[in-house]
Image (cartoon, rainbow, N blue to C red):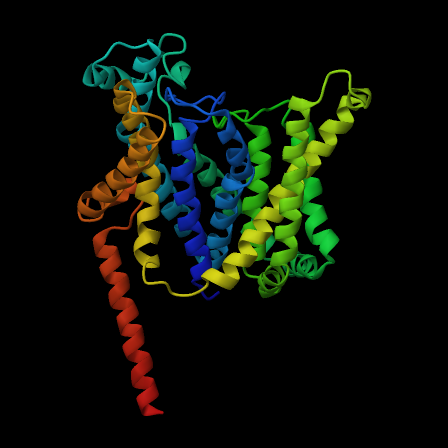
Length: 414
């Protein structure tokens, strides 16, 4: 199997994680939503753009992760691939939980009055991984927390599960079924995944609401594992990419219509008088309609993003190699910087525009400085943030150079 490098997949990953930084910054300012620390300047109107994004943002990351594995073609080296992915996902997770994340529970606990100031005494106690007083911080009952790094253990689990299934998924009948799905009528291409997502949200979400705690998080496992598997199955189908590119305007239109319906129903629930005829319609009918609109929006938004990405982003941008490497360290660092900056700036009462601007700007600057001048340049630190060892990069560069020279020599002989 030949490895394929897709510029649009790399670019979409970069944009998705950039959006994650903006989203987590906004979490400190959106009204009536829980977050580890909240600014004094919250606004309820922020809920609407946040809903517009959060219905698909994490699914996009898992779908891209599945697609990237398919394009890496690891089928001939499954044990090695599983070992490399375990190293690249679990080492940063453990390091992050003990070194990068602790500032988050500290700021959260001090800001809420559950912990006394003094970061280093807190850190020494935190490293003992013992239960904390109730509500000290998110994850207090476990003694330690992974906060935003929950994506890593979820991805690791799905990746190892995929390794086990790869021999079956590579069977001719499975590939034929996937190819047939890519050629299916639009109503089936859109409707079948939407129906699956609707089943999850109607039957699993009420029993297992999302927690990001891994154990018992069955609704999110079902949703994220499904789109991850879908990314893997569809990524190598040329027919899928030509189809989503051709349908990009249609899927974008459906996505906008469905999110319009979903948000409209939410708004109507807040504005319509209690004696309206609307309340004579059984509530389960409105629930099913709302969740169907949400599920349709999620899947068509993903299709639209992939289609537009294939058309617009599948080219070798000069910034892409650097940003592709930077994604992992920035992902690990950003939320700790956001929470620390809100914690520092909140007592200054800088206003509803200057404070978030400084938080966002400071987070970007902090990620850049730490990545550019420390993480990527210090050999033993690189693996702690999911980057390859310098000697491995040099070996790969030498191999690529030798391959180019060999091709050039062959061309001269011809």
